[in-house]
Amino acid sequence: QAVLIRKKAKRVVVCYDADDAGQKNAKRAIKLLAQAGFSCNEMSVMVVSDAKDVDEALQHGCTLIEQPILTYLEEREEYEQYVDALMY
Image 1 (cartoon, rainbow, N blue to C red):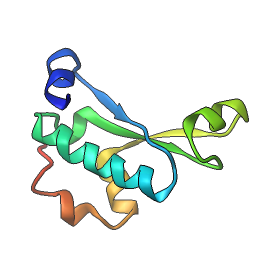
Image 2 (tube, rainbow, N blue to C red):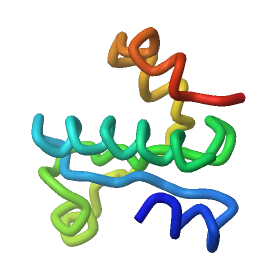
Image 3 (spheres, rainbow, N blue to C red):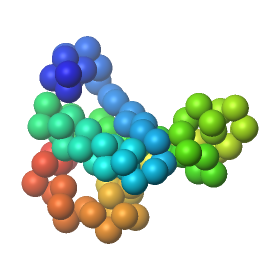
Image 4 (cartoon, rainbow, N blue to C red):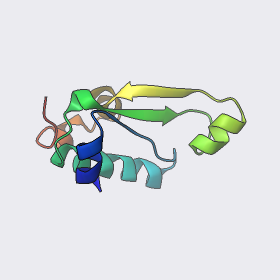
């Protein structure tokens, strides 16, 4: 699916639930999208604050913050694990 997305999109925003499973899947998606050819400048992550998921955030007027991929990974101290997968 990441390859199909790459064929149709120039930029992608990853957005998963705020729980541990959602964050794990977001990181997996980042790797897959990088392998499909997206550079770190073409990807970002939508961070959900004060809600368990995007739907709840929108219903309750919570803040959604779009973060660059590198900022997202650095804040979670996981940048080193992704350096090889990410292209500049």
